[in-house]
Amino acid sequence: MNSISRVFKALADPTRRQILQELKQSEMAAGEIAARFEISGPSISRHLAILKSADLVSDRRSGNHILYRLEPHNLANAVGDFLSAICPTQVIQQHKIRSRRRT
Amino acid sequence: MNSISRVFKALADPTRRQILQELKQSEMAAGEIAARFEISGPSISRHLAILKSADLVSDRRSGNHILYRLEPHNLANAVGDFLSAICPTQVIQQHKIRSRRRT
DNA sequence: GAACTATTTAGCAAAATAGCTAAGTATATA
DNA sequence: TATATACTTAGCTATTTTGCTAAATAGTTC
Image 1 (cartoon, chains in turn green, yellow, brown, red):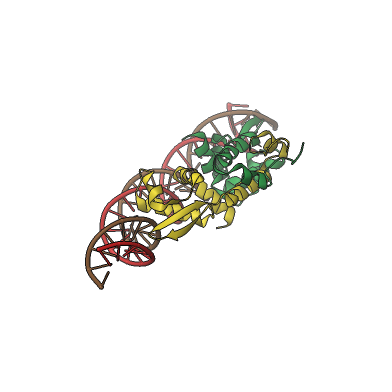
Image 2 (image 1 turned 45 degrees about the horizontal axis):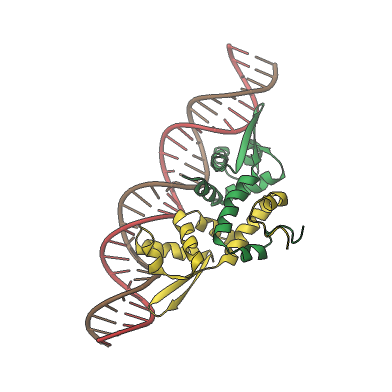
């Protein structure tokens, strides 16, 4: 599966999108993430593996914990490239994902 | 299912993403779209229904044909809102989905 | 209205997805 | 080294998704 497919597949699940939201604040241990959801630890672990394989998060071990961190560049690249390929520039400009109007 | 979920589910399939790309040029009849893919007409018809239920395309009848049209605003809104919610402004600005640098 | 064209809907099979529990791996600590 | 903690991997089930063909619907034309 190619990169863009992995990203959009990863984003198709609401739990995974929510995990990304949680990680926006700061990196978190897998267990800490799991504690914020109703579903089981192993299920969250699998969601994290899917997010990681899409390069939307990265992980690192810290002692007994595994810390997950959002990788916003990869998210912005994949999704942004797609948007840019589909939507006329004008539409993107009209939307608030634009950067500041004047620099 | 809510709007954002419908959009991301719709975008999860590569055939559907490609349909959106094809529609970027101009509106097209269902059969004309189907002709560009290997898969059967009924399967394309279902993909179109999914894209429509996510408000990513609209359709209108013209005589014997049903013409599908890209709805880029809905695409930009849903995906853009999500990106804005997850990625720091800085990351979005660095990416080319930003609008022109200076106006 | 009968026949033709364009498209969708129905019904089915195969594959993918997401959930669970149980078992395995890795690190920390007594 | 034994035990505890934190996660992941394996193996299973239920559900959803995607593809197909056949049948139904909508509009056009003779």
